[in-house]
Image (cartoon, rainbow, N blue to C red; front, side, top):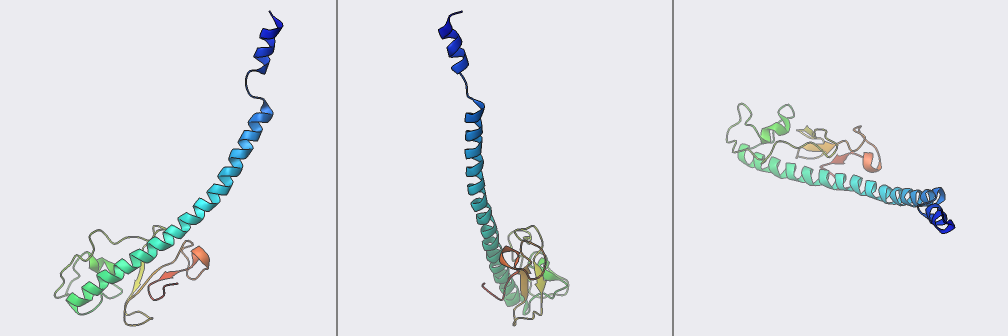
Length: 146
């Protein structure tokens, strides 16, 4: 075997150190980009919930215009899709699809009469599913735009 042939075979391919450098660079890139993408996902969920709460408020307003009152807490948001018993002038459904769940796949909480004005209280408990919280865990409520 010629020495030049042997040298070419040993020089062909990637060394372990080169492979480790490439894997480290890829891991750093994924780490930096991944954190930013996850933050945007949480932000998008909050925006989605705020938009859905506004949509539900609009549907509830139409319900009230037709029936003269908002649905009571016991009937809840289902009154926007199915006619409750003993309700005159119901002209629904007031939502094109089923009542949505929040961005964390939990039902919206509904209370009427509410504690924050004449309109019903609508809220999502945020990412943690617990009352209160801060940041993305904070409750998203109909009576505040924060």
